[in-house]
Image 1: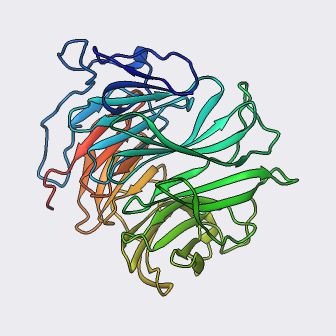
Image 2: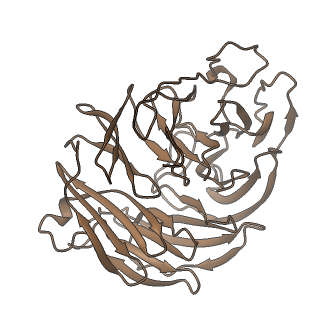
Image 3: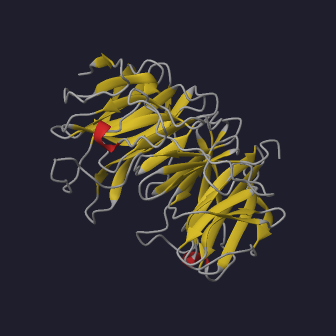
Length: 403
């Protein structure tokens, strides 16, 4: 099903034989050669697609991108250090890994028309990529793991078969997107998958599992309330806790929308449900924005309704709320795509009216970023910020990484 091709020139063509690998340098990538734009003076043999900018200001972040990667990505994420970027286009038929310092394309993995990547995650150390792969003819879901440096798959394991009446033109079942993430230390992979739909076409048959990274075997299955749907997951820095946001749709009872559930991974027990705004009459109007563990005893959750902000910090061990903020600078009712940095210090946000900003939540400094931006993601180190534009991924670095 896989074919490895050594590319002397650094440019590879897909062969269309199942899932295939094109080795461009080191690692793996999924971009079609026709979509790669060379954006610096170099020979065609170079897979690098980066431009450099040295513009910085007396603030926490550079205001112009340090690196620009010519890739239109629907999904993207960073390794913990921020040195490697994983991207995938909307079609889900390929993924890429890039060097964020140089813009070099490291590796390519692409699928044929019978398979699709429904979810992707890069390991914290940047050496592996996990993927949920769906086969159109059978609707079988499998979990795969690739070695980035060789471009070769390490293992695959079946997850189950999707059930549902909603299919696209290629025959793939669509619905609630699966979720994947590596635990700190990269010893386990969490997967969240809904395999079916109930009579009201609501996603059902949730499987929330932790997989051994050496084999893909299920090491642990987590307890989940029967009617809950989840939007996002985060591990605590030491990997002992997992937090999940309950999706605020499908007529959930008041007070439950956008609440956060916390599991203790030593025994898989659900230990707390944190209701971020249960004491607010407008709590159901607030939409979840982001959450981050800033320590083993600190979980920060951000929600917004128009110009109103709720920034709550909880002790996930006890379930106690320890801080509550309702006032942030430069907030606009049109704000979208908000992201908190892993240390809880910075907030990336954009709107059509106010533009793209990085807000320092401690000293309330606002750094405006140049250009039209969409979604963004921080590295776990907090020193790298990747931002999607309509045609590129822009990489920003802290002006002072030690700050």
